[in-house]
Every structure is written in structure tokens, then in C-alpha cells.
Image (cartoon, rainbow, N blue to C red; front, side, top):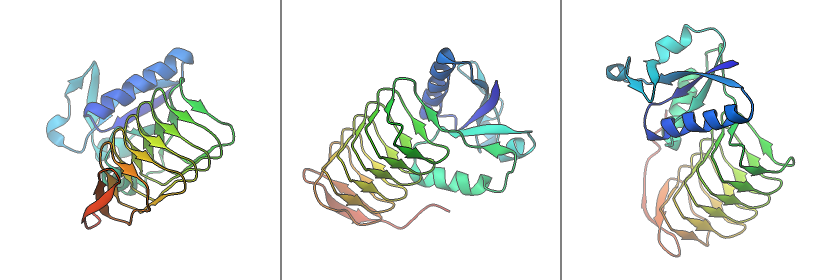
Length: 218
């Protein structure tokens, strides 16, 4: 089996481990070594029988190894990906839960996590390091930009474009043909009916920007 570690050691990282275990039940694919955490205080901790192995320095000393993001924050995912970019020993598999409905006409980049219960219809373009959490529906011709996170029970209609680093909230809904600008946060249960600009937080029904923020990724 291929060696894999989960970058992060919080709640979502534990969910990603569970996803990998579900994949292994269908076909033995991954040997889960443990977690990677940049906080030295967490090194050596054991979480659900798996150790926190170390941080970047531990990772760079390994032979060929797969890394999956166990972090939901779009900005944090981009910062980690940038940090690891020069490591030739690291690969970034796509992890798709066996229950996911996923058309062969969809395209997908690297390092994506698609959790249990999702339905992705047809001609969807998922770029790199996106996270699609539990029980979302994503319609035809949607673009999911790199580092974007779509939180549980979201409903995404056809021809939607999420630019890079969108954070789309739990139970949020977006109608067809809408674009959400890079770095924008859409609040829980929001209903998006018009394009949203970059780097804002939008909430409500209909969703409207309530504040703008600076880019915080590196």
C-alpha cells in the first residue's frame, strides 16, 4: 500500500482519516502513517491511534509519500501547498469517498478531498486542493477553483464559477450562472443570486457583502 499522511491534526483531519479508511475498505490502497502538524507542541501526540509525526522538517526527510490536506481553510491550504511546493518526494492524490456520484466527464486536478454523500453531475472542473465536505450537490459545468472549500449540505446549481480560495458555507445555496470572486467567504445558509466580488464576506438571503478583507495567504 502507498504511504499517506494527513496535513493537520484537528477535527477535519480526523474526518479525512475516516474517509481514507472507507476507501481502504473498498480496496486496500493507503497505509496511514499519521498526522503532520506545524506546531511542535503537538508532535508525539496520539490521536485516534495515529501519531502526530512532526512538521515540515519530518516530511522533507521521507522517501516518496502522499500528503492530503486535513484543513478546511482555503488560505491555510494555499499557504501549506506553497510551503511544500519544492518537495520532490511528495505527491498529492485526490481522495474521493466511495459513495460519491462522480461523472467520468468531470475533470479534477490534484490534492482534492471529496467527502461522503456528494453528488457531482457532469462536466464539472475541480482544480487543485479543493475540499467538498459532506452531502453537497454540484450541478453541470461548475468550476471549483483551487483551494476552495464547500461546506456540508451546500447546493450549487449549474454553470457556477467559484474562483480560487472561496469558502462556501454550510447549507448555502447558489443559483445557476453565478460567479463568486477569489477569497470570498459565503456564510452558512446564505442564498447567492448575484455575482459576488473577490475578498468579501457575504451573508443573508439574498447574500450581500457585509465586509471586505485583505488576502491573508502566502
